[in-house]
Length: 58
Image (cartoon, rainbow, N blue to C red; front, side, top):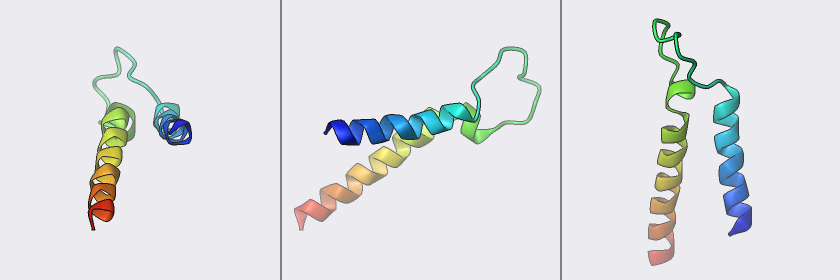
């Protein structure tokens, strides 16, 4: 389990390296990786768990 957690945190770090929200820059274009990085990472983990659930169920 620690290896999985380290991989997940590495994925989140990649999203955060692309940039974080800076107050005052709200008038720029929306960057999905910057603005929704945590949400995208959580969605990828949820899809992975869903696939593994069905893989182990069969």
